[in-house]
Image 1 (spheres, rainbow, N blue to C red):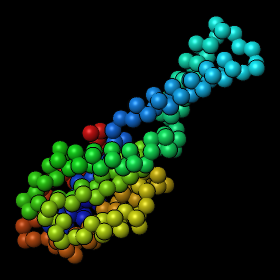
Image 2 (image 1 turned 90 degrees about the horizontal axis):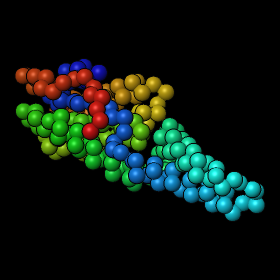
Image 3 (image 1 turned 90 degrees about the vertical axis):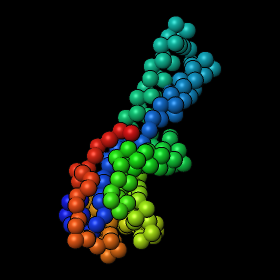
Length: 194
C-alpha cells in the first residue's frame, strides 16, 4: 500500500506499528497494591474468621492476580491508565519515531509518519515541514476520524491500508510526483518499541 501510494506523490510515507507507547508499570503496580490492601482490610476487619498465618500469602496472591489481570486484559488496562497519560505517551513516542527513523531525511522534507500504538488504541499522522505548509492538520485528523480505530478493527491491516490510501489521495492532490521521484525511505511497516 505504501509503495503504491508513493507512485502518486513526491511524499514519502513511513508506517510504524508499536505494541505500546511506553511503560505503564507504575500504574500496574499501584493497581496491584490497591487490590492487595483492600484484600488485607477485608480479611482483618471481616466478621469471617481468617487464619493469621494465611494473611500474607493471600494478600500476595491477590496482588499478583490483580497485576496479571491488569496486564492481560487490554480494555481494563486502558481504562486504568487514563486517557491523558495515554495521549501523552503516544505523542511522545510518535515524535521519537519521527526522528529516529529520519522521516525528516527526505530531499524536500516531504516525509509522513503514520504511527499506530496498539495498547493505547491510537493512531497519529505526523507530516514533515514540506507537507505541513500544503496540508492542514484538520485533514489528517479527518482521515483518522473516518477510519476509526486501527488496532481494534476487525481487520487491522485493512484499516491501516485505508488510512494509507486516504493519505495518498490527499498527498496526490497537494504534492504530485515530480519527474524524479526516488524512493528515499523504506516502504515496509516497522514493528517497533521505542
